[in-house]
Image (cartoon, rainbow, N blue to C red; front, side):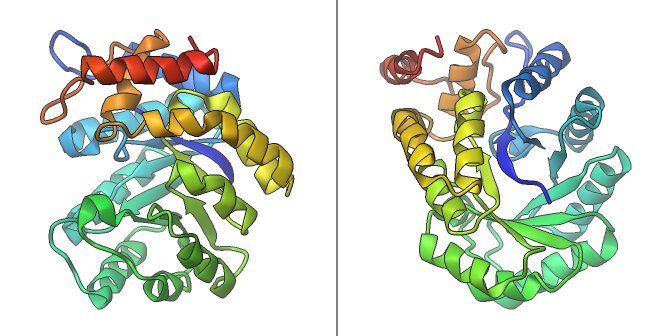
Length: 292
């Protein structure tokens, strides 16, 4: 089971032409391994999956796998609002060696709960790789209810859920109703500590792009049941959590990673650069943690 601080990694792009920056990607992966990140998510929401072509999508996942070289797990974002497309992306991720796949609920379509069940069941039956559900209704206009997640947990290669609602009661319900082979991950940095202490297995994190060591330490403490240590670290991180969502993700986090000198910070439209006023706020949060 994949546990701990799992970074939803930004996808570096060249400022001049917005092509993918492979050298920067290599640096990012190496840096995260050095900093103690426990696993990587390639081309999730934070990785601007919505603006990558299918070919780029597969190439980024392959690059993650090759650079990490088995040192930490790689989870590939392969969700889509078309079931057949999700199957094709998941097959591509399996082919290049991803350890697991993360599949967001079908966005825009607004399927019923039965539609969600059938969608995920079809992908799981078509591709024999571990799969993690991803529920983020704030971005998809589609909310997977706890009952649906619990029902899907009985499918062998559906091994977990990234629950990004911040609803701890819902997370607790899923944890209680599923067995030890089904992992519940936070997709909300603000409540990740509490979710792990409830029995969750980690945090698929935006903040970990910028403060990977602190996030790794916080998650490790929470997983060990050391609530006091986890709270102490999380209190320090709270202003950075806030700063990472001062504008739509991944606008603030990509700017922040650029300030670490790891990437150029370019975004593809319709994402735009962080405003000057918010740059000041993000920079202050980073300085307060001695990150820059």
